[in-house]
Image (cartoon, rainbow, N blue to C red; front, top):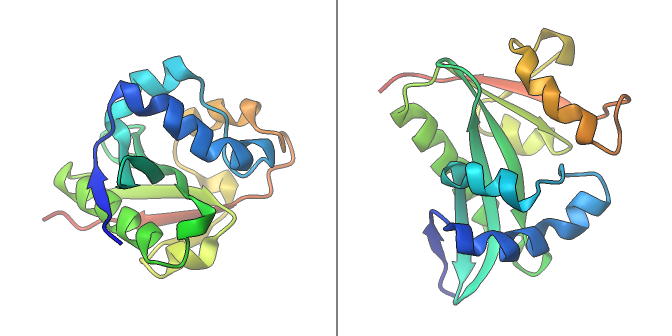
Length: 156
């Protein structure tokens, strides 16, 4: 199979929303409406098989120091093929190019991110309160059961 990694366009948003729908409904990923995705479209990296988007991730910058990995998703039929790993690696490369110092993730898959040097932290120690602004959209709010991890980045 041939996979292409790319920066999606606003015209890709509908397909991206369809891909993540099940994860949004079960509360694993926050809902993002079309307008919100459009204003942050440059933060996404996606992967497609032919014309179909089968996965994506976002690198959301909070401050000059801190960014967050968001919305990592791979279509079920394509999981276990290293696509999530490749998206995480692309996100780390981009964060390093942007000379960010820390990368945060809130996830149910802590072991996946620990493989890349992320360390579990107490959610209360997350360094930027802006991150919590999105939490009100979560099905699990105010009882967050995600695991917070932080990675210190090395500048290239």
